[in-house]
Image: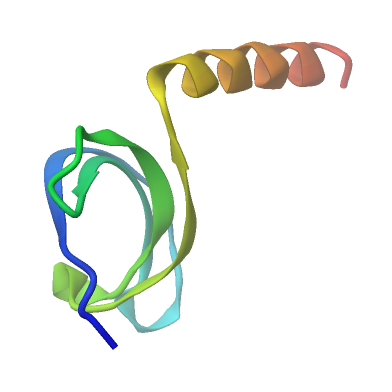
Length: 75
């Protein structure tokens, strides 16, 4: 199996931290040399392993922000 190539272009922030030092992070990540996208996923310490995550284009991130704002207003 081919190794996944990625480059964390910009670290935006940590959403939460779990056991063993794993952190849910929001980053700009370039996957396999492609243009960077917003990426939310769990990372092991020193980013040697990663969990499943969500990668979003700018347009998808804007739409998600709108939906989250709407959802939080109705609470």
